[in-house]
Image (tube, rainbow, N blue to C red; front, side, top):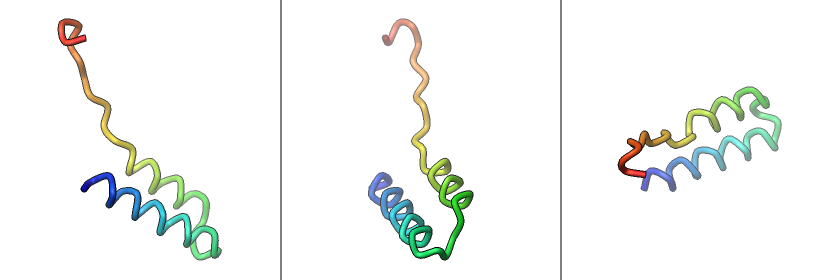
Length: 46
């Protein structure tokens, strides 16, 4: 579910960027907000 919402938001902002309603900085900011968190693994779990 979370991934589909993230994909939807990114797609919408890309469409806005393509039509000239938002700038490249905003597009990059939204993409950075939607990056999944990096999981921390212990040496034992690897």
